[in-house]
Length: 302
Ligand code: CAA
Ligand code: NAD
Image 1: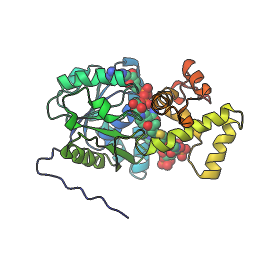
Image 2: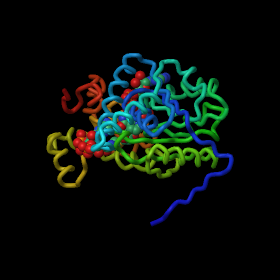
Image 3: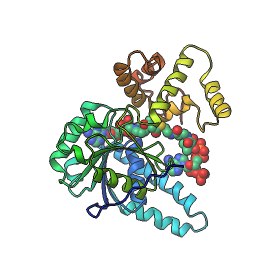
Image 4: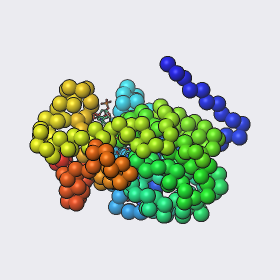
């Protein structure tokens, strides 16, 4: 087994204050995990309705984590929940949210132009010391960072859904990310309780470069009428040992996100048919059936 050794340097900052931008599926999970591991967290979303939903989702998820961690000591579990909640504040004001941030984790829509608009303004309002990280699934971290004047303090932190459960964190170092920033992101990932792996700034990093073509092939199989959604899912759960089949996993990830990933990769690699978004996927997005988060995708959720 190869072991990575990474040492802290005397000038290394400890990341204590974390601002998470985007309170959807991923941002809510990142904010929760950061708060439950002792960080001061500010969670921002432009949409006050989403913030309400996010607070409820975090409370529910904290309850599930507490139940697991403090099975025999419910009073300790209650303290854990209250502690995490007390370290988490939510707001809609992006400018205010980054005032004291050591780290900003961006988890907004998978669109380069929208991310650029956000990071340009963050670059103006965040202190010099603040490290920026994107949770993008498929875009180049270097391309996202290119609109800022802190490309040395910019890296990728790619979490997995559901963040409170999935143990992995991919840390992405671009050619311009400084060694110090990289070390601070690795140390922060560890403090968040995650197992960190490092990947170059390549499309999809490790997990999505392998997972997204698999999801896309499953949708193409469905579109050809080779098997039903239920049979595809059963096949991969019982035949390959996956916890979810690809069709239910696509519903879980969100079809707007998967379509955005495939469209940008299809443009870059037109010869790779696995990246060609299927018509069923485009139709679901058009109909706003984005998966679990909207209550319907390939399947219906009550
Ligand atoms: N918060 C807290 N705890 C949660 C939770 C949440 N949101 N969701 C599940 N859990 C906990 C449950 O409480 C339960 O705990 P116990 O074992 O103590 O009972 C445990 O996790 C298992 O949950 P369930 O029994 O409800 O359901 P399950 O066994 O089917 O597991 C799952 C649910 C963890 C989501 C599992 O189905 C799974 O691992 N699915 C695959 C997920 C996956 O592949 N994610 C990656 C998507 S790709 C991505 O994220 C990258 C990208 O860029 C697109
Ligand atoms: P989502 O649609 O659930 O949430 C995005 C949130 O961002 C929405 O609540 C929206 O209101 C908010 N938002 C949009 N623009 C904003 C802005 N300028 N300022 C503040 N908030 C803003 O999306 P998601 O699934 O959480 O994905 C977010 C990011 O994480 C994307 O880059 C995606 O590729 C990546 N990602 C997704 C998954 C997944 O499984 N869904 C996994 C890993 C990474």
